[in-house]
Image (cartoon, rainbow, N blue to C red; front, top):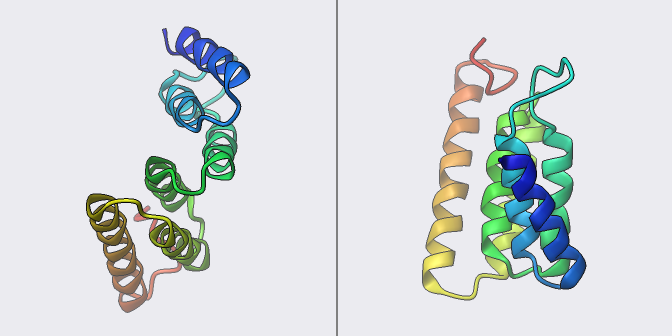
Length: 130
């Protein structure tokens, strides 16, 4: 079903390349599609590409910043990569349209900073607990 949904979102992207919503929805379909062909994980690189394209299409699209930040934080291999998520949220803060969007991205930024600070205090090299 997620594969079918992604195909529909791709059609929507072709119909209106300046609408960021189908890019975000396609990214979510990608990460929720069970891996196939021997893959162990969803295609996170494709999902990141789609979310980055959503921001390129509309730099003020709050949902793309939130989803991309969460995804990049979960994929961060070290604390410097995790810090890049803070920079992404800082960029998103510049484009908030409403107080609710501002609050949401501020909360995501605060949580990210807290995770990085805790990892640093615990002498961890990454956010990965394994």
